[in-house]
Length: 165
Image (tube, rainbow, N blue to C red):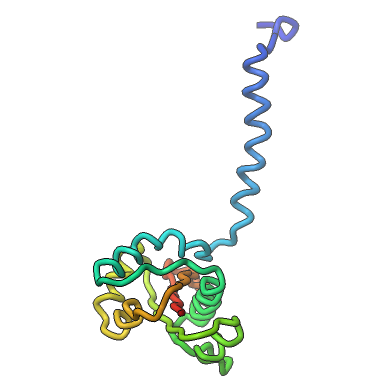
């Protein structure tokens, strides 16, 4: 078809225009979330946490953004250090991090490392008596869960769960 005879239908034009607008927006969306950070994981784990608690006769826990922020800080430290630890190495133990994040009342932390789905992560914690005790403590009402991927380029995820009253 010669260029002089090329006509773009209104439907084709609108389709092209829509793709032209949405494509850059989709690209921007991937840039806003830094790679290797597991923010927003608490909301994904809420039903799993509720099932664990209710099957043990306990009230559920509420996902809490302050606790998730504290969990993400710990996961990020462990990922950058390449090891699991409740102490950051900057002289900040769990109690100091809780205080610095303005978490009041009782609190506990579970940590783990591995590339796994949430159901496996929580199954591992439930199989460990100290972690299980934290998750089933009836005094806790809130939780925050996050992970950070290892900075070494491996596929390992460093997980942190912060529970509080």
